[in-house]
Image (cartoon, rainbow, N blue to C red; front, side):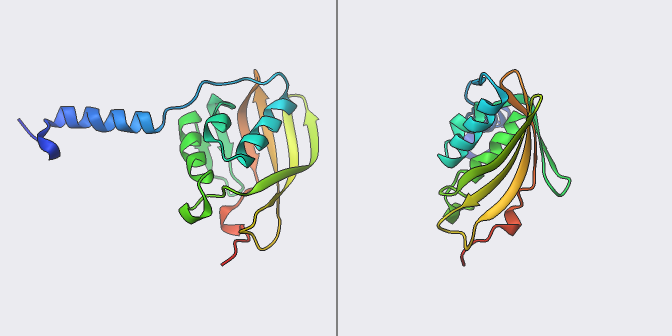
Length: 156
């Protein structure tokens, strides 16, 4: 029988790695909000608090994140992996410590459109952007963003 590192047979090793990956990505229960505005309010509050669990409670299973360069992140698990890094401190590649403030909000049906300002002690100046948050049943179902990590005005 093939043995991997630690002397485990290959199927047992694969099962162990799969279980470790699943536990690292364990998503919290979803927590629907009563209105589209409350969904987005909770999103900003959780992001500003660097609270991954609270943030991920807002996403539908089939969530799609659309970036300004045409990229997409599909599904709640993939979004979870993306935001896991975002809520880390800057020393680990994240933006924890940044505060995003909505400047203008326009609700159209279940879509909340927001122009926002992000400020942080590790930014040289405020960073402006906008997003459209499509909600469904009290959760985020799609998000279109102008967020561009490469354009953040980070202090050197």
